[in-house]
Each structure stands twice: as C-alpha cells, then as structure tokens.
Image 1 (cartoon, one colour):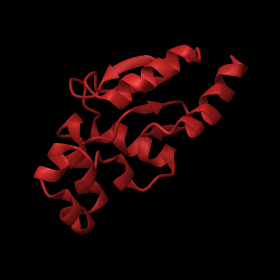
Image 2 (spheres, one colour; image 1 turned 90 degrees about the horizontal axis):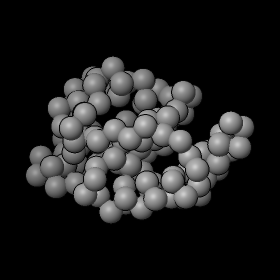
Image 3 (spheres, helix red, strand yellow; image 1 turned 30 degrees about the vertical axis):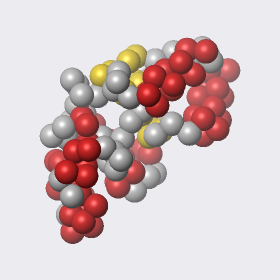
Length: 122
C-alpha cells in the first residue's frame, strides 16, 4: 500500500502514528515532492468510488487562493485531473492506495474497517 502524506500536516502525522501502532505496512510517499500523475489520479478515482471533488484538499491555502470552490463545478473531469496533477498541495491527504481501494482523508473508523481487515489476512 502507498501512503501519501505531507510531513508538516498534523492529520498526516496522526495517521502515520495510527498506521504504525496498528501494524499496517505501507510505503510512504511525500505528496508535495512526488505529486500524483493524471494517470494515477484517474485510477485512484475509479477505485475509490468517490466523487472527484473528494480528491481536492478543500481546506488548503492553494485551493482557497485559486478560488477553486467556484471554478471546479464548471471544469470537466479531465481538467480537474490535470489541475490536481500540477501540485501535490491541491490533493486531499492523507491518502492510502491499495490494490483495490483508495481512502482519502483520515477517518479512523473507515480506515480501521478497511485496513485492519486487510492486515488480519496477511
């Protein structure tokens, strides 16, 4: 599994601690330095079952500075993928990507349900 995070993000730090405490194995990927590609974003979006808007870091400064709340509804999915691929700070974090699932934003009960079930199998 790949864990996308931003080292200065307190939620990412909390999530990493939770993953480690629960014995979840992952490869850490710094989202700012290794921004997801358009192809990765498309694949993750498809696997997640989430609306593409859930992949945007709506509480981030860049999102607010770019006034994306007003612009996103008028953009095509392709335009949104392209925009997300320009800067890791636009992408929701933390995110964990498995073979057949994607979790975006840390919700402990949701992550526990998915990850601890997988962990028990390995």
